[in-house]
Each structure stands twice: as structure tokens, then as C-alpha cells.
Amino acid sequence: MTSVETKVKDELVEAKKHPMDDLLRRDRLPHVWCSGCGLGSILSCFVQAVAKSGLDTKKIAVVSGIGCTGRASGYINLDVFHTTHGRAIPFAIGLSLANPDLKVVVFSGDGDLFAIGGNHIIHAARRNADITVICANNFIYGMTGGQLAPTTPTNSWSSTSPYGNVETPFNLCHLVYSAGASYVARWTSLNVRRLQESIEEALLRPGFSFIEVISACPTTFGRRNEFDTGLKMLRYFNEKTVIKHNIDPKEVPIVLGQDIVVGKFINKPIQPTLEDRVERVHQKSSPK
Ligand SMILES: Cc1ncc(C[n+]2csc(CCOP(=O)(O)OP(=O)(O)O)c2C)c(N)n1
Ligand code: SF4
Ligand SMILES: [Mg+2]
Image 1: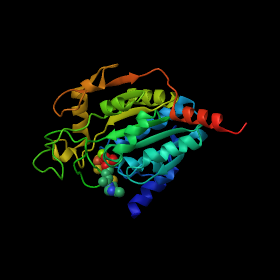
Image 2 (image 1 turned 90 degrees about the horizontal axis):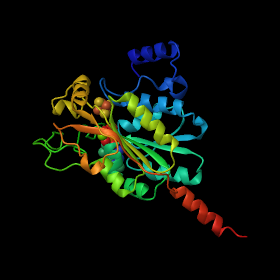
Image 3 (image 1 turned 180 degrees about the horizontal axis):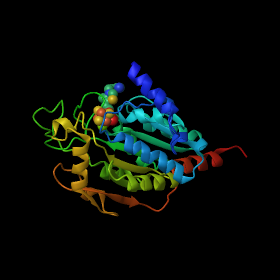
Image 4 (image 1 turned 30 degrees about the vertical axis):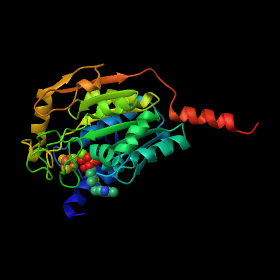
């Protein structure tokens, strides 16, 4: 740590307590995220949602994979696990099956969850695993220098698509809904109040819930795509965001230059979870 970082850290520790301090690991600050990054806002919405939910913080676990987003777990003052790249979902399901009283949250990036970890997320949704997944979608592999992800919009630029992306990206909300997700919402890192409410709602309902957060990444996505500051990305979100609740996620792909449809898309009636079904089998199979 440089002397400037040490000074900033000491000043922060000395500073007046913030209302969310109990849920943050202040000794880990300042965080590593770039100026203008959306991840700080998403983290803030998450801790505020936890506080408002009234859940017992001793019974919440947060799991993340690898990437800029994956670093979030290190700043949250709950039981947190920073797992390997792409494996946050199986780790989370393991926790939830071993201790169904836990509320298990996965907080990770689009690449982690839908590229290397894509197989796990579809099966978690299919099984209605009792986990809440918050996916920060910055359209890119942020941490490793801006490589093309399965979420990179067609025609946009990345370090591995220097002539523009020729592929069609996944519509994450449609993908998880098709696989069986019972709660699906999408917001941007600018919609802080609505995002916080959605996270709170997802935390309080059993079953597989999924929240996509379109997150500003000026450093690796933005600067190659005419949004070289966080402010430019937020202005773009502000201009293009349209709220439509209860819409079939199939209708709302993300196409650069077109409206970004956000909202609470799916909120199915509560169904038995994977954990409920496993518990029932255990009860049936226990010796009389
Ligand atoms: C097995 C493995 N493969 C590749 C990597 C390199 N790697 C680290 S983070 C990352 C991409 C992360 O992208 P995303 O999940 O979108 O997170 P972001 O940084 O954009 O928040 C990759 C490919 C790794 N750490 N482990
Ligand atoms: S590279 Fe992008 S996602 Fe990563 S911290 Fe910087 S702005 Fe945020
Ligand atoms: Mg990413």
C-alpha cells in the first residue's frame, strides 16, 4: 500500500461512522474500483437492502466469483466467500443445501456468471435453488482488460473485437427466465432506489431470484465505446432507460443505441425450492 493509500485509509477509519458501517468492512477501504464505476452504487444498494430487509445478518452468506464485481464480497461485513472464477453458483447451492436456514446471495459479474459459469446458472434456475443472484452486467470482462463477453452488445468494441462485435449477446433476463427463474428484474446502476427495493424483495422470497444490474464501466467498456467517463455512461442510462414491469424478458434484449428496458419482469408465485425437495426426500428416506 502506498503512503497516500495508507493516509486515506487512516482518515476513513477516523471519520464519523456511516449508517451502513456495520455491514461494510471499513478496514478494507478504499476499494479497488475505478472512478465512475457502477459497482460502488450496487454494493451500497445491497447493504441498504440487507439492513431494510430485517433479515438476521448472522444468517446471510454472500458468494462471489472472480472479476471487478467479485471483489464486492471482500467489502461486505457478513459471512462472505470469494470463490474461483465461474464457480460462485455451485458454492452457493452447497451452502444453501447444507444449511437451508441461510439466505445465500451470489454477487458477481456477467462474465463470471454467464461465460465460464454459464452452465451452473441455468441449472440453478431450473432447480429453483433458494439463492438470490445479483449480476453486475458491464458488458465486458472488466478486470482482465476488456475482453469480449457473452453480454457485449453487437457492434460494440472490446479489446478482442477491435473491428466491432459480430456476435449477438445473451439477454440475461430471458435466459434465466427460460431456465426457470422465479423472480427476474433488471435495473441500471443509476436506478438506486428501485434496485434497492428489488434486492430487498428478492432477499425476502424463497426460490431462485435474479437481478441484472447494467453497470457503468468507463475504464474497459466505456472508453472503447464513446463513454470514457462514468458520468457519460450514467447520462446514457438516464436517456435510454424505460421502465416496463411484468413484461416477457424475451421482448427486452439489450441493443446499443436503443432503449434499455428495466423493471420487475417476473415474480412467480412461490414454488417449492430445491432445498425443500431435498429435505422431503431426506425425511422419507430416514430410518423409522
Ligand atoms: C479459471 C480462470 N479463467 C480466467 C480467469 C481470468 N479472469 C479473471 S476475471 C475474468 C472476467 C471477469 O469478468 P466479469 O465476471 O464480467 O467481471 P468484471 O470484471 O467485468 O466485473 C477472467 C476471464 C480466472 N481468474 N480464472
Ligand atoms: S474496470 Fe470497469 S468494472 Fe472494473 S473497476 Fe474499473 S470501471 Fe469498474
Ligand atoms: Mg463484466
